[in-house]
Image 1 (tube, helix red, strand yellow):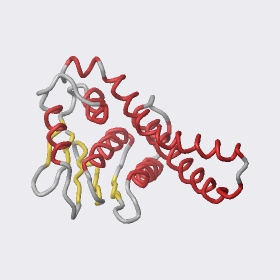
Image 2 (cartoon, one colour):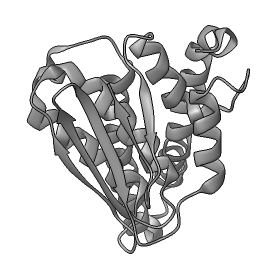
Image 3 (cartoon, one colour):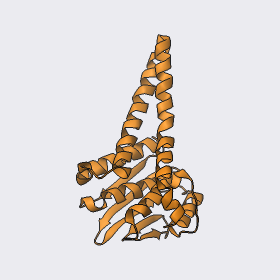
Image 4 (tube, one colour):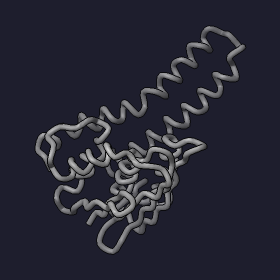
Length: 202
């Protein structure tokens, strides 16, 4: 892993998390301001904003805590890991183009890897699809199944990071850098590109 990226992994993760939360934090703030003004004509809209934004914030914070935080007992609960990952995906997809998940985990060993890989692949999807992920005999594998196009620019950047071809990157690729740092050369991230996009970690 590039030394400069390794040095900046904390800044990249903090910036990415902040970026992914700030929009809904702002929405909650705006709704509270409307409540303080006391205009009941907007009460239904305010309730909708608060309901949606609070669910998004809760789902994303729970996911980020598992993916980037210190190891905790929640990672041992495979059903909870899958539930948390699916809830996160619902916050970035929409009713017309949802991102769904098929996840098979058998142990805590690859729980955090699974969350990070799912986050990385979700970033590549443009208009909905399914992420199929499973623990395999000697590692973890995940691929995208989608009828829409995937972001060629994001795939290109991810491949460059994994190949150590760049010294700096944007915060949106923090999960890639963090996953590399987490594996610490003990396992390799291999890219799957045959009619899809995905990874095998082994």
